[in-house]
Length: 630
Ligand code: PRX
Image 1 (tube, rainbow, N blue to C red):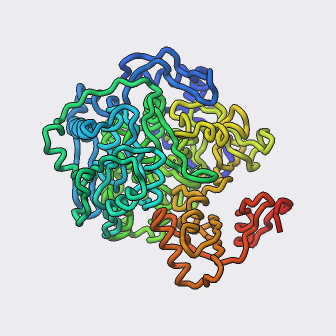
Image 2: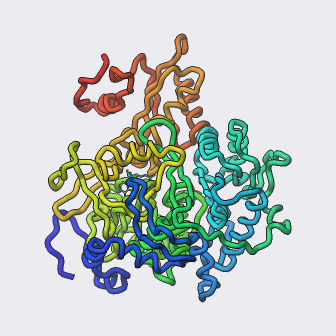
Image 3: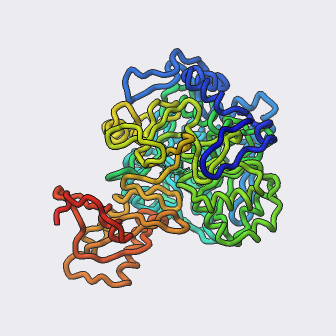
């Protein structure tokens, strides 16, 4: 394909990649999608199963509460499993899994369907039905996917809480969602150690009141407390007659809630992002198929955690909707040695690997010899997500892991967007560090304070100017916050919370968050969560958290703490506080560093000026200080 001269360092797709790709000409597809946006999405929706077809593709009558595929009825779980059972895919491997300790499990589409139906029957017997909330708190195991799909089958709403979160984080999410049932694993393996998830859940349950039943999946087999009348072993329930393996699917209106996923926002408690069956299904299906160029024979591996949106959209739902074979791995990339991932790719013949910059940087640190010891020639495509990837890590990933042959899909998106928003496709010329352009049909922009498009290469706020099918529908229990946080700054447009620039070729370069969200190793944390965990410690009067650049993690958390009268700020206390945050929020939220201070910079209205703390820590100009109290 003839290319106009582009700026900067460009990696052109090979002829072979273009010839085999689903999408051979990105501009043509984008033109088509721009000109007939609803027609483009309707055509994708047609490829999925609807019990009743929609009357209207997009309903904009109550902005920003958009609706998609209005009047249609479907069920995402039916499209993930049942539709394949009448085709040859019935016997195809849907999911295979390796545990950190080498355990192995695999499920055909046929078998996975059975397991999901049985799990749905168990939930039904506990009174779970349409609209009920179920919280899922597990490590990276197949049962997590069964549980999600079982909820979807019944029209119940799942709320997965990342297994790396701890007591208060879980409690808050149970309470806000008013979950009836909690599904938990006894524990998970992380770097050879057992994390006592059931123990953490017990502590959280002691603080939360709504949970009636707990289903416990045995993974590690360590001793756990089982509360009679409340807690049930999953394997024992499976053996009961109610655990039979057929379960009628609920035919659901397209806008029926599918899941809540809590994520950190600008202020206060994490908010529950709500996604629905129809639009989310169409968005994740089409985006995965085109961007990762899914082929029938692929063995696809998204190495994220199912507890985050990446896992929801691109470990569980997207792959099953496309009918691909997907791999799940329980453990960390470098345990017991830095070749664990490379070993898995070689052993299982993985074709597509999707991971995060923090993992790439962490693996790169060990040098080229570890991956080079393995045959990685099965890899065809690579992906990255979660935070900006530095060009050095991009090039290492491309050269060493992709042997210079695998295009890298740098996908920018969010819990809120549900699907890839800025992303290349294999036929697109790549620039290391840029996610290239918006997915076909989308309209995005980079604007200044006044909402005017900034000049090429100038920094501004990243916004989305058109609704898309997999978009969040609201914040559960807080529609006002949905409107205020996302749609009020630039009325009619969605505010992403990121800053970015767009170069002369229309390629987007994400700079980072412009709010009080900190990305630590790609995980999204709010300053408010960390601060309230610190303040819940008996010694702390006030606290402020900021993110500072970190070579491997992207950002690391630094905290400033004012102690209560008479308490001395010793290194031991700093360590206790770090542990306390780990216990309440989770190990990923543990501050890297704690400074004991006498005061914090605040505005006259009492808001902590984190930007001033950050500037001071980095030794840079803090900018406008006119609102500073003292
Ligand atoms: O700042 C952006 C960053 O991650 C944020 C969304 O976080 P979360 O909702 O946890 O979802 C992460 C996985 C989809 C964004 O606002 N981000 C995500 N992907 C990229 C990114 N930053 C740069 N490049 C990316 N590819």
